[in-house]
Image (cartoon, rainbow, N blue to C red; front, side, top):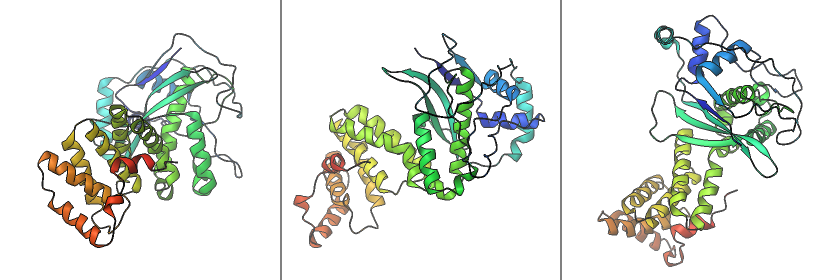
Length: 353
């Protein structure tokens, strides 16, 4: 049984701008809860605005109108049912173009946008949940291969809980959608939560300390790294390559391309490319890693990357003298290169928790 929620070309941020230009308040998250209680809201109960969003930018196709009495993903506070949505018409193309021309100069630049592109109802043996697919998009740029994640409500809830434990002051103003006891799988609930999760991630990304925290960053790419490592260990290199590549794009969008996790990602890409006989691509990954390790006299991955680079450079007919010189420096410094693990061994043994 599946239901899918699709986004059209116009994202929610453009819609918010257009609604404001027409004199409305746009789609906003509800204010935070009273003092002493963590903020817990869906979107504000703007039925007309939500109806416009559903009819103008979202389409929801379902074979049945489900009203679930069961609770979704654990205990949670109940929420009164919201009124049924009224049908709303899309803005005319001419109006959209005119409003865009008038307001484009007032747009505040954003480094990263979070867009829920689909939400699918997943049924398993003992559970049923909604899986939200989210694109990470650089503002003002077109990504041929977008960075994506797929997360369920409980994943967002865990992130919210971890961040509130560590950043209680910063998180005081961050709203998070409530759990519901009923109607978790209706078009209205899924649309509201999709928008709420976009707002939630955008708000978190706007706070410097949170944006740089391991809790926030690893919410995006750690599951992909773990999955890619498992696939590599079992010899499923083609599937692993796609997962390593998505982890690479996620870290690139989040601006963490000099971390140990990113070096491990390059190692995964190099190993999978080499196993699939894509030697030029593997060589390029090693070169990128060695550029990042240029200023480091010692690193657990330096020797394995140098050895892999020398081997691949010989295979593809590239210059390997610099890497050979750096390996000689490591030997003279007393590093037993014969006992060094290979890049693949480092990749498999690295604990990812």
